[in-house]
Length: 286
Image (cartoon, rainbow, N blue to C red; front, side, top):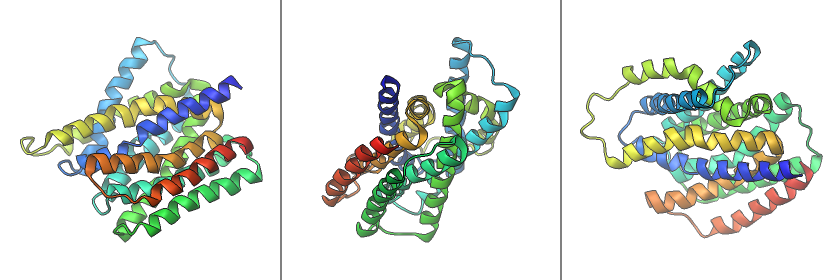
């Protein structure tokens, strides 16, 4: 029981950290090219991940772990950040954030396919209900829609759900922070080369807010958040703890309003109550 509780606590901390990712990315792509932002954040996080692995003298992954680690890297180190960074050139942060309400359902589906989990039928009903509340809220908010931006966000949700499930499966054996660290280290040579290739021609026009945003998505979104998130998924179950992602859009919307001054409606709080109830009840049936 303590392990399950710790899983929910770690998962919540991970979601809280991830909630700042899209607002920070939105700020960063004002000055940075989306491809450079993606590979640079991964390179910076990869350096720190390598230092952590050396300091704590972690055992290297076995041969059978290499391909799954590359899948994690492709999905959460490159795929999700790149797709969302490009999408944020077409839609607002507030609009993009609401798509994150589909992440619990995506994670749960891949948790069944890759993690062998079997939640009860009531869990799926609540998961679909919670996702529907978030999507319905997105549609009624009247945010400017772009077919390209929307398609990229949907693709990012599918890729991210798969990466979360695959990483959580590995975390049961390797440990939470070790999985994302090894994934970052394995991709580090490619990310460094691509960072140099896509480096901006001039650094003088880049604002301080963009540098701070790059720092946040590199250290918190790309590394520290995953330390808590993968540990939480491994402890509490992929499908169960994954429901906490339903709260991420609302934390993100608050940050978008405070940091980016994007407008949000009071209806968000009513929907938030419904989402919290779905998460609380789904926990009992996971």
